[in-house]
Amino acid sequence: MYESDHAAVYDLFYQGRGKDYATEATEVAQLIRARNPGADTLLDVACGTGTHAHDFAKEFSQVEGLELAPDMIAVARRRLPDTPLHQGDMRDFRLDRRFGAVVCMFSSIGYLPTTADLDAALASFARHLDPGGVVVVEPWWFPESFHDGWVSADAVHGEARSVVRLSHSTRVGRATRMEVHFVVADARNGPRHFTDTHLITLFHRHEYESAFVRAGLPVEYLPGGPSGRGLFVGVAPREAS
Image (tube, rainbow, N blue to C red; front, side, top):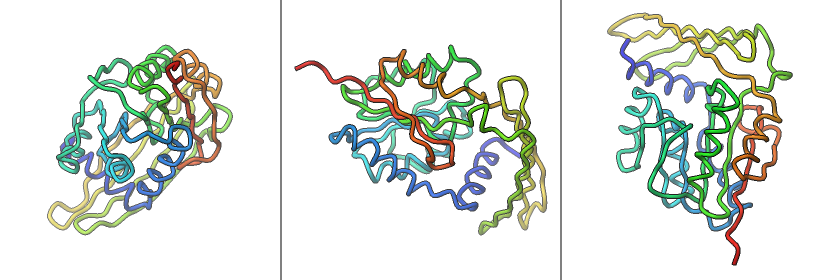
């Protein structure tokens, strides 16, 4: 299976399982505007295949995306041909503009391996904010809330193919090791199988909060959020009048 096809399967699976990107985008936009009413531009960091960015574009007049993985950004560019999408690393990217909001959704922040990387990412987010701009980060599980040995199984059916996903998550040191098996079937090729392995860091809540503070962003943690893991919301200081 080609990498671009792999990204398309990822897209099909999460939408087919019922992930409500539109509602998530609306609720995050409301959080942003409650803290920065004039925010009308947004950068979606780790934008993946562009599903959140597509819906953020209904809430903000200008949306851009940043994504490291070539296969993901290829799908995003097909979905969002008129949206500026940048390939880059969240730890050290430098764009030529600032935004009213920077968001990092779907626990993508957890793929950073160390607190030094977390600090670097938050500093990069802050560097791209307008005065009074807002950063929203959806974390991975905290160490105390992660369920070691968790097994998940789902099947979704699209117009052209069906996807079965089975995952097993275990704790390895400070990280979650998630082994994910996909079986994809369509009329032409029949069933095919591939495996993903993810290492997602179990940062403590205080480590996220410290990274925000070191980036100059006073932060609050909101329980719940799109996936039950909460949201961190930081606000840049406004320039003195």
